Length: 358
Image 1: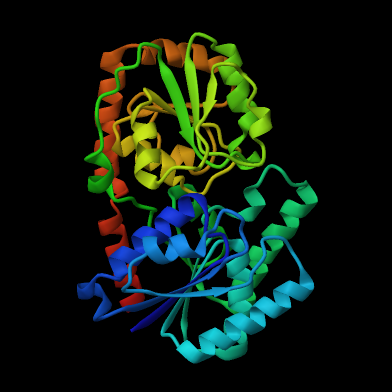
Image 2: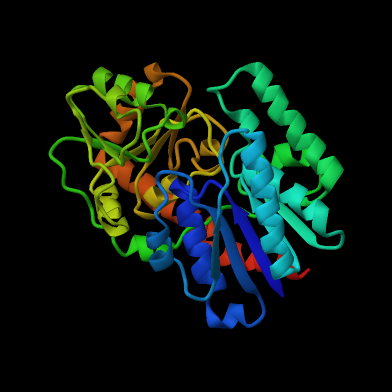
């Protein structure tokens, strides 16, 4: 069986997801039944094609084509033609489209070529859930998602529980949650010994991760240290004196060591799919504070693995509880168990393979 994955937004948590996917499906035992090709765009500035070549399994094929995030009639048309050409050469049995842009371009390209292929689509966070766009734009994106499902078909594979609830309203769908390599991450876990309570996030500094809120929290709690593991175009918004920005000049193990060194993980997102970074923090037995949005609320169990919050004023009570080492340890143990129960990449990729072959 030939499976082709198409992704435009190969960055952040989606990069980790695809790297893990490549190693699972690139394994000799899996590859003898399912050959895997990943078609991706190299236009995002955080993408390094050479790094992808070295990070991803040699057991999968990689094809780079030009796709852009925003609506661009001329470039989108060129992308469809290029994608159509590559799919025609590959002639796959299954085509799995990831994120909104690839979902649109891929379904048009498939419609021009195939009628009997299995087509799946994973939103990784629906574009109409973004809060940095107007209501008119949100409605436009919703209409595209609904109409494309009706016109071009395909089955949605939601990456989280709330995304699945939304997907069911749009069309036929399944739930296969995002997962992580728990064993690889957990082996790096060492109990932190910070003299000052340290709170951190792993992310690009973009509007989706709400650096303004992160900065406000740091200013509200000057007696704590805050770490932003990453960098991005909005780093100028992080002005609080108790914030340290690590930058991206580190490899993955270094980033995980920085993550392991914090006491509490905080996710200040405005919107999410199902954030990989939160899962990685939980695998390192970190309690999680997260905004009460789709994706975050599908991971964090209040009073068991951390807390969800709608307003910064709620954090005083939560920080007071999480100052206690016993509470952090209890929540961390619960977090790791929840990862094993729901977010193990091996279980979830196995379910994906079974769906392809069904």
